[in-house]
Length: 103
Image 1 (spheres, one colour):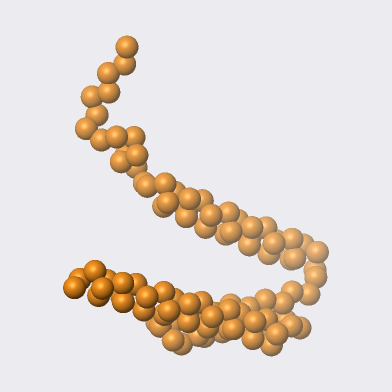
Image 2: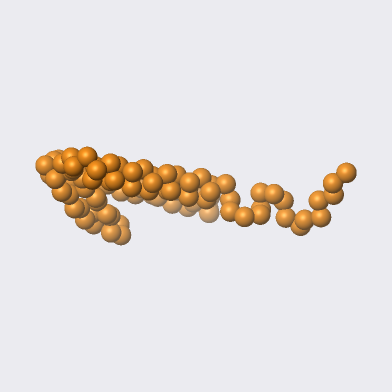
């Protein structure tokens, strides 16, 4: 017979499951990007890419390179703006719901 003398349950020890899944997903994406980068360098293929960073809350800054730079930059910027708008809508709805419950 095993007696558990711990004050904490198994779920409370270490990181929460959501944080573990987030870190695993981030690491998989990072490793995949490195593998793709190394494969493109080895094959000598032409590479196009881009990055859009959203600086608090409304300023998207984009960088792109390669043959399809303009197309990639436009698509990434549209996606970033759509995510910002969705975020604003969700925050607005949550604030309205909080006001309703506060009354």
